[in-house]
Image 1 (spheres, one colour):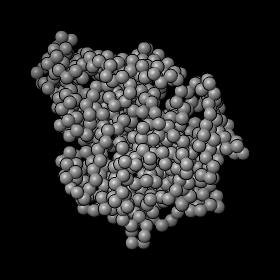
Image 2: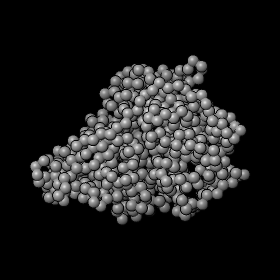
Image 3: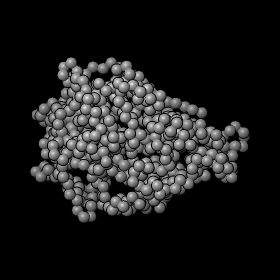
Image 4: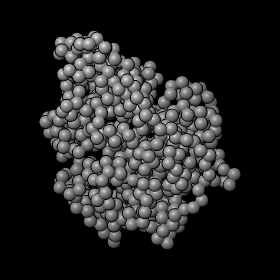
Length: 562
C-alpha cells in the first residue's frame, strides 16, 4: 500500500566559481540587507544581541584571507529562484540572500523598512506612498529606482498567472502603480483597502529584481541581496558569491556552497565528516542527539511560526468530502505521541491551524475531535462505514477507503505520514502513501490529485495569517482543499478590511473554530526548527522568526526560530 518516490541528490566535490556579472557601468556583482541608523539589519541584529556566541562568530578564514562556507540545505522547486514561478522559488531567492523586498520582519514579527526607507498611507488605506531607499544598487551595479520597483511589480502581474505564486494575493492586479525617479516615490492606489500592505510587500513573492537586465529568472535573477547565485548544478546546488554592490555593509563570506541534501542523516554525516560547515533541519532524532552531545557543534532548536499539517481535499467526489469520515480520521490520530516521541519533540502538538504561541486565541478554542480511536470506530460503525468483506479496510458507498496521502521528505513530514498511515489502519482506514519531492507535492495541490497533502507552512508570512488562511477561502484561487463555508468566506473578507488589531484577532479566532468544527485539516503540530553548525568554522546562521533568511549579512551561532 505504500509507494515511495524520492530523488536523491548526489554530493559532488565542488570548485568555487570565479566569474561575476557586471552591468550599468557599475562594480562587479555583490550583496544586500541593511544600512546605517534605523535600518532593518541593525534592528534585527539588536534583537539577537543576547544570543551571539562571539567566539564562534569569529569563524575561520580561507588561506587567501576570505571566509567561505558550505551549507547543506533542502532542494525546493528544483532550485528555481523565480518569485513569479511558485512560492517555494520565491523563498529560495530570499533565503539564499539573492533578493530583498521593500520591507522585512524582525524577530518579533514587526514589519521594518528594507528597500523602502519611509512610507505613508491615507486614512482609507487605499493609497500608499513608498520612498525607495537611496544609494541601493542591484548586484549588476544598476541603481535601484522607483521605476525599477514598478517594473518588477508589473512583471509579477504579467508572469504571475503563468506560475503558482499568486502575487495577486499580496497586491491586487487592479492596483494602479506609478513611479517617479525624481522623488524616489512609488505610489500604489488600490481598489481594496489593505490593512497590512507593508507586510504583504515583505513576502518573498514580492521581492524586487532588476527586470531590465535579468536574462534568467530561474537560476540567475539580479537582486539587491548580499549574494549572487552562480554555477547552478541540477540536484547539486549553487555557488553563492558576495555581492560587491551590496548596500548594507560587509558581506561575511566571499562564497557559500549551497549543497542540496534532502536526507537528514546524510546532512548529519556530512557535518561530522567536515564536508559541511552548516546544515538546517536535521530531523532524525538520533542524529540530532548525537550532535547535541558533541561539543564541536552548536545545535539550535527554536519555536517558530510554522505548522505541520495535511490539507484535506474535500472536493465533491473525494472520499474526505464525507464529514463523518473526516471526523473519524481526526479522532484516530495521536498527535501528542507523534510530536513528542515519533519526531522527538521537533514539533509541539496542537489541534488548530495556527500555532498556539501566536496571539490568536488558541486558549479559547475548542477541539471537537480529540484523540479517541474507540469513539472513531463507533462513529464509523453507526454511519454504516464498515468493513463488509473482512479485509481490514472499511468501505464508503461501496468503495474501499484508501486515502491518497502525498507528502515529501523534509521537516519530519515523512515520519508523520508513516505514523498516520499506521494509526488509521487500526480503525480500518487505508492510506496509500506517496513520498515525492517538494515540487511533486506542490504539483498535487494544483491538480487536486490527493486526499491528504502533508506539508509544513509558514503561518504569518506577511505578519498576519491572511495569506496562509486563504487555503480555505473558496474565492482565493489558492483553495487547494476544495473547502467552501459561507461563514468562513464572510469572515475572511471582513478580515481584509478590518484595521483594528483586536478585532482582527477575534475574526481569526472565529475562523479557526469554524475549521475545527468542520474537521477541515489534519494538524500534526507546530514546528521547532533546527540549525546545526561546526563551531570553529562558522558558528551558525541568523534565521529570522518568519524563516525569511538562511543567509544574511550577520552569521551567529544561535537562531531565534524559523
